[in-house]
Length: 163
Length: 163
Image (cartoon, rainbow over all chains, first blue to last red; front, side, top):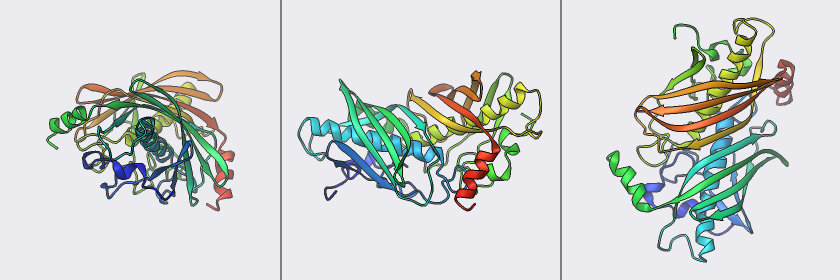
């Protein structure tokens, strides 16, 4: 994992996400990498992200699945074209749907390992299957459907809110 | 909506959730009520919960679907037995699975309306369908499968982490 994380390459206007934006000082700032055919993100939630005391809040786990999934989709898009994430044309992905199965309670106070595997790429749609391991046990499984959108659409959304 | 919100009735050991726990000072502290056959939660995300500037972060929206869904499941359990949420025996629900469809970007800076409708109750399992409206438009649809668990299981989980 010596290469730069996927989120490093997001342009500034896509780097404010609470889950994965390097420019959101309040957020989680997750970092995702390739590990062979799988993607990986290591993350230890802060202690306030409680479901019941001692266990991680489901919304936090959903966020990890979401942002690691879109990051993996973006990286997979560039990889499919055999080029680096800092080359043009830029590929932008948004989450179309998110599914999370909570298999067992996820303990707080340990580093979580989030892994992703690209299951399908069809047209602009990428399906990423994911799982979260805590203390050697898989506690969560999930799936993200990410859709590639033109940068012009993102810029149009920003313009509508005056950003 | 003059009655007390569902989360008011959660016992202290289930009131620390980052999404809906009244005792989590860092969290969202969402409040859900009945509105006829539907449940409703009004919530305005704080400005740091960004996806792209001006729009709400998907993990925040997933959290609202999750916690409003389990709250609705719990309230539905008591309602099915025609008794108040502060009566015994207590009914406790955890999220088994969460699905979220992001239909369009959800604007920041407006009050979101999260609504739920109980679709199925079979044994200990409750399925809640939900949707989020922002500025008059439905931007998110979701579903939670919540499972009723014995309070003894929750107390056992707490004991394992020394809580």
